[in-house]
Amino acid sequence: MSQMRLLRLFISERLHVAAEEIFAAVQRTITEHDEEAAGSDQDSDQHGLTQEVHSHRKVNKTEVECLIREFNLLLGEQTIPGRVVTGLDRGKFRSILHNIFGMTDDMIMDGVFRTFDKDNDSFVSVKEWIEGLSVFLRGTLDEKMKYCFNVYDLNGDNYISREEMFHMLKNSLIRQPTEEDPDEGIKDLVEITLKKMDHDHDGRISFTDFEKAVREENLLLEAFGTCLPDTTRIEAFEQHVFQEQPEQ
Image (cartoon, rainbow, N blue to C red; front, side, top):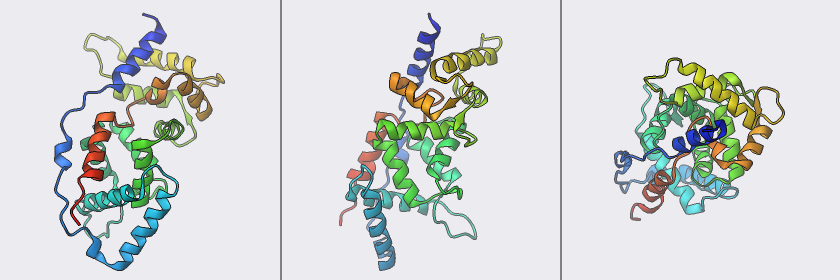
């Protein structure tokens, strides 16, 4: 089997992770106290946020309101003693990625949290939640390329280095018990990947390199770890949040 075919087979297998039934854990009844009784100021803020996000994203006004309601529900499950909670912290957000979207790779989940948390305050705000999910659920290829690249750029220097590739691939690959030195195999895979994606041959992957490679071969979008939900989980989440609405 050629090196390129091996790489494509590896990527393809990782993109089709089986979707087990975890979503039932979050399918709870949304009760009548919708948070709408929380006061007219909150309603006004929510209306402004709905208009702002809807103006440039692929979720409609009603869906934005549903995402705000789900955010408030998840926020209500999170308690931090002595602090007023205004956003989802890293632990809560990672549990959402795992339980709802089936992610298991700690390094990738941290990258997703960092990518959602645009203001870098260690919390995902309601605005960051909606804007991140609009790409997560319905993003264009351009949006998903920027998102995935940011997840994989572990140190935020606008490049994916050999070291970052090595750590991400090592973290996500299932080691074969008969393999004597798995690190050597991962190093080989890094070099194969660089040959395919490093178009300017500087030993690292810029966004320009990443974009060109993904446009040539879409499977490379998640080359370094699964950081987008599969179709099954997207449909389940949208069914839960957008269609199972409380009676007015």
